[in-house]
Amino acid sequence: MNALIEINKVKMAFPVTGGAFQRVKGHVNAVNNVSLAIERGRTLGVVGESGCGKSTLARIVVGLYAPTDGDIIFDGKQIAGPGMGVDFATSRRIQIVFQDPYSSLDPRLPIGDSIAEGLVIHDIGDKTERRKAVADMLELVGLPPQAADRFPHEFSGGQRQRIGIARALIMKPEFLVCDEPTSALDVSVQAQILNLLKRLKSQLNLTMMFISHNLAVVRHIADDVMVMYLGRAVEIGPVNKIFANPQHPYTKALLSATLIADPDRRGERIKLTGELPSPLKPPSGCPFHPRCTLANDRCRADMPGLTERDGVRVACHAVEEGRA
Image (cartoon, rainbow, N blue to C red; front, top):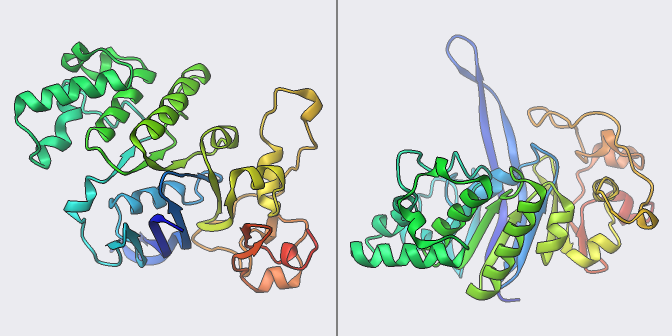
């Protein structure tokens, strides 16, 4: 396996404070013992409910958070671990496209200055060369070069997301993290941005992590899928295998809720009971057991680990025992 990035048992715990002296009352394990590898040229889709840790994992990968445990290896070099600072030399090789295309841009700067900011920070080129690079990048994402002198409020949501993509790609990264880049856009514009990302991935030979709660979007763009629940990975595998034969009960429920335009292909909707447990006080054993119809005493007592089954890694005692 030619992995560009390896995530090894990464954890991210945020302290919860309260009272007059803001004492630490507990910790929220936003990401809990996640391990995976992404091969060069492939796209990993990360899916799950809101609050499952998807965006936190993205911010750890790009260096916005330092994990409280575990490490990340990029191209054979450790770039993240407890107490580690940002690796400035490697940071330009990993870029991120944020969810909200408006709040991620400085409203006081022309978009050309926002796009060129990374070049300035890394002292790449002079003013003329940077302006030429910005013009070329705007054309690459489908915007006219003269748009560099306009401000963010003069663009639509889809155009602003193209600007965000241009700002990330101007550093010529090898690894691109997309944190729900289409969730704030209209459906027709979503398709345009997804097709743009697929074209740029092929054209620029990118490796990607694509985060979304929309499984239909992930199926369109990803090669592999990781399903997360309450900070943990519960199923990891190739997109075609997971969509054709989901094994974890949570993955099955997510897929059953995906809208399908063809009425002949619609299956029975699996409705989960109860609410997502609090990450401050997660349940014992398998974190999904309070909402799972297959849960037994073992599920309530023991945390399942990822085990491989038919080319897919699944964390489920029911699957392991043949009850799913």
